[in-house]
Image (cartoon, rainbow, N blue to C red):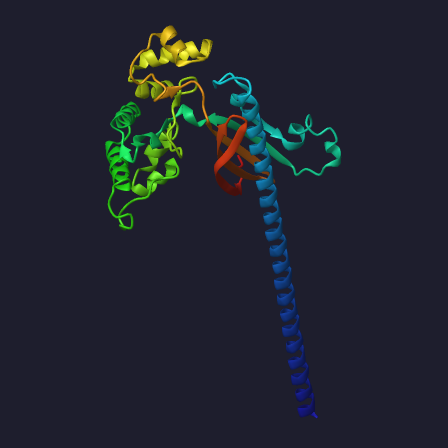
Length: 319
C-alpha cells in the first residue's frame, strides 16, 4: 500500500514537473515570437521613417533648386542679399507648406521639423584650381599657401596635399598601387593623411569642386579674398564692407570703388556670380535627426544635382 502511494506521488511529481517545463517552454516561445514581432515592427517603422526622410530631403532640395533657378532669371550676379541666401529657420512641416498647399488638411504629413540654408560653394577657394591642364598651377598653389598661413594650419598637412596632388596627376603608370586618386570632396583628403582638425577649419574657407571655378567676390570671406587677391586684411575687409553696402555687379566696379587692381583680380580668378551651390537640409522627425548636403550646378535655368552627402537618421540629443 505504501509502495503504491509512493509510486503515485512520484508519478504526480513527474507530471507536475513536466507541466511546469511545458509552461516555461510555451512562455519562452511566446516571448520570443512577441520579441521577433516587435523587432519586425521596429524595423519596418525605421525603414518607413527613413523613406519619408529621404523624400522630404528630396522635396527640400527641389525647393532650393527652384529658388536658384528663379534667381538666375533676375541677374547675372550673386550676393548675400538675394532670396537664396536667406536661411530657412526650423519650422514644422505642416506650417511650412501651409502657403503652398491650400488643402493640406486633407494630406497626411508626418510630424517633422525642417531647417536649412543655401551656401555659395564659390565663396570658398576651390582646391581643384591647383590642377590646370593636368599640371600643378603655381599661382593657385601660392593662393593655397597664403590661405593656409592665414588660418594657421599645419604645414605638414599642406605638404601632404601638394605631394599627393602631384602624385595623382603624374604621368606614371595609372595602375601603380601607390598612386592616389583625386578626391571628390574635401573630406577625402583625410584618406591622404590630412588631420581632422585641419579639415574642420579648412572646410569653412575651401572645398573641392569637380571643375575649375572662380571666386565670387560678393560672397567670399575676407580671409579668402586676402589669399586669392594677395591683399592685407584691411584691404579685404574694405572689399567686404563695400559689398555689404552695395554688391558688386562687375569686377570693373570693384576696381573702381575699392581701388584694387592686380593680376589676380581678373576673370581667371574672380567673378561676381556663381554656378555651384551647396544645399544644406536638416530634418527632425520622431526625435531623429537627418542631415543632407547637396551640391548643385546652375547653368542658366537648369539646376542639376552634382552629388549628395546623406547622413542617416540619428537620435536627437536631449537636454
